Image (cartoon, rainbow, N blue to C red; front, side, top):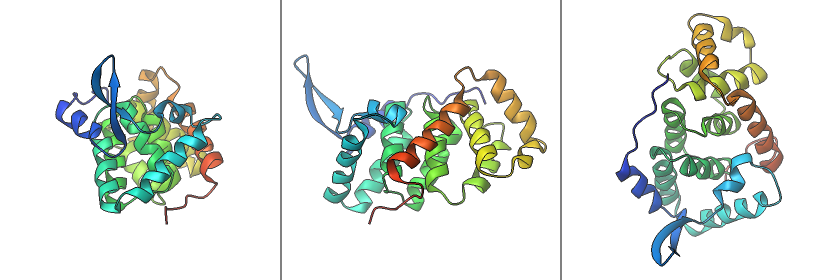
Length: 206
């Protein structure tokens, strides 16, 4: 519950080589920089969001689905929260496959600084959210910052009594005592923002 996976430098490098990044220069050095402003996605509100989402959708039109799927999974496989935020925005914007959903749920289990955003994304796009969320809520190896928003969104959207059974109640309570960032509120607010930006019902990219 407390342990965060170690940084995998190879996975971080692979994420930077995806179509979501481009070549740039910083202080005379070549770097890879995000094609969309991940900071605009951190709260998923404000005047910049629409333009940044449109950049992602332009990428959907530029690349084959199998390339996009591979690269979204690559972002979620890394441990960098910036990559996770970009992946969340891309998935919520409509690009989702069975494999990318599987990678999203694994990332939720493993944990991230943006776990609330990951959970909110899953709640928005996955019709099987309640079943998968309960599975992770009953697993004390799920990262605590994921457990808290999973419980908060489940309580808001589904049958709260399911959170009162053993071992879910004890696991969630322990996670809440560890969490210092109000991750449940962040997750529920981000889900509301997704619905404002993308619509009440999730729509796959055509």
